[in-house]
Length: 162
Ligand SMILES: [Zn+2]
Ligand SMILES: [Zn+2]
Image 1 (cartoon, rainbow, N blue to C red):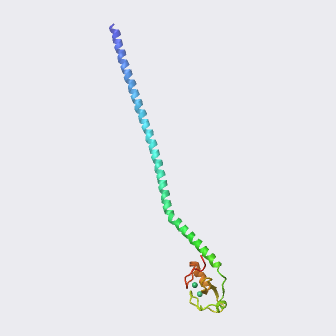
Image 2: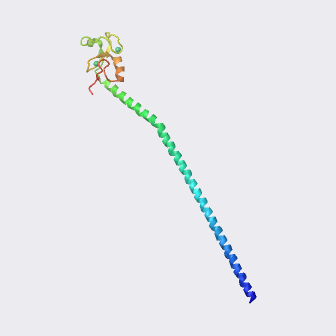
């Protein structure tokens, strides 16, 4: 009787020890799993943060690039615009009546000197008559002027009807 009660006490202690050991093992397992999950989270987060950093640096570089390129592009547009205007002026100049010898105009005009170079017209000088205001200039002088603006240097009126 005594030995069996001792035996059952021993069994009880053994059971407690086993349960205790089991609980410790389970607790350790939970702890390990918890640590492991946290490590994964941290890893993912740092990965994500690294990716965000890359994205941010890329987008800020892109924005900087846009700001750096903007003046260049505007300058390009401005140049293009200028070239277009110059091309249009050249076209307008080409459409003017052809240049003629000063002798041809001599009888019909009172102008004796080119208002651009201030030289007197001479016989044989190639001259251009502006069709609207009838002012005449050396062919070379007025062409240079008209490339800058399409108005008559004397009366400032447009050289062609708009
Ligand atoms: Zn001239
Ligand atoms: Zn004029």
